[in-house]
Image 1 (spheres, rainbow, N blue to C red):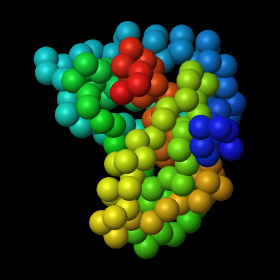
Image 2: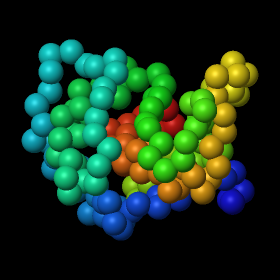
Image 3: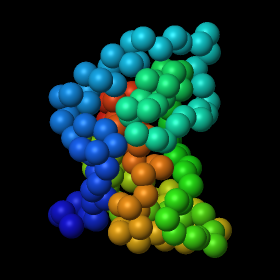
Length: 150
């Protein structure tokens, strides 16, 4: 834990995608520059969550549609591949680590969501074992980098 709160480590960096921030930045930048942009920015996107070797370039087509100047808040929904959950789960962390830079979770929004009783809290170990959310974090960091903090 850091002085800023609980950190969810980038546990799949180095296997599902590169752990080098410089390499990752260049790779994402290359894929994003090759992806075509639609005429209007997206309000929501659906993107793959497999390893970047398999779908990194494909994900760029989704993230290329994001106008960081129009984004007010980012929500990521992903499946749980390893643990059965009875409700949707919120991360028990305060910060998502990426090789590019760390993303801070809006705890006020978390509290509002949790108060609805529709969500449970996921343990850090379950969160770090799961890849579905993590695979989106570097793309979000790259696309939103001029908006930090967003």
